[in-house]
Image 1 (cartoon, helix red, strand yellow):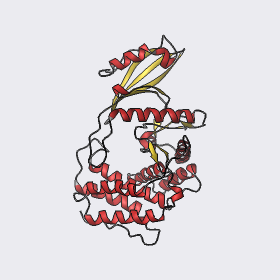
Image 2: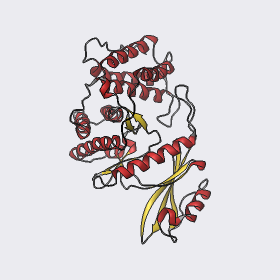
Image 3: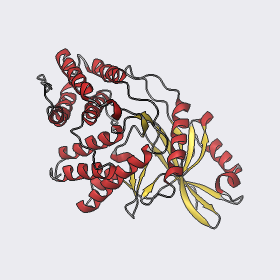
Image 4: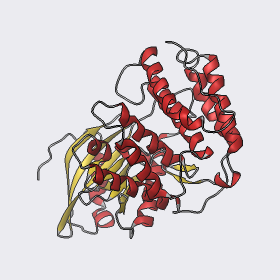
Length: 351
């Protein structure tokens, strides 16, 4: 196999990997060849073909790029992202090693000084691509249930430590609302969303706020489905501790986004969402105050990311674009929030 892509910026890492073939691949004669380069907003990946021990597989050498500073997030050193992702990937791979249909990429090596890591490839397709394809709905529903089971298994890789601070959570949401106000939201809207948060927070059962391991960016593009319909989750750079409904509600909201695509049958989205919850826990329900609170947080974060153009390779969006997305999110989140007494639905201001 010949090199078919640029290795610019990777040469020193490739040299080190080849010098440690026995440690990484158990074969002093292993052949490592670069076959594809992938440029992404926050990283660049080099896909490698590895021939070792009479067999072959692919791996990804990932180098993190600096993330632009934003006023609503604390600064995090780039090497911290690398160590966080590698450590989380190693823990979840070890925990799921013997679980049927639930996978995680095998971490091979980490290079903190170079802000890089090496992991074995899991063969499959990203879930977002499958959702755009002609995969039978029954297959997708089964996959959604397995994702719910994956989330539950991931939460059990280490004991729960501490509990959610609702006061800190309110500050987290308000930091993003302040960023959106007044360019995209009115002061009245900000106050209404905070009022919704406080109403929900008052209903949250303290016993449900234990902190568990969370992926913190669980979305269709970070979920891989193998040809055997097994599921693997990628990209643990944001992994940390959070509530048991954090990842679940985030993907639940992303499934809701499917309704906004042309050609999607609206009745299929609830089936996906129900399967996700069923695979996680038969008692999980979007009507629970903590689940509603998480949905509200994710909706605010989604619009904030859009407003900073961090979701897509695009210029800063105009106010009408952000306003339309804000209304769509509230049209989905508000009915859940409205099920309890004393909750007032936010009123969207005119664009």
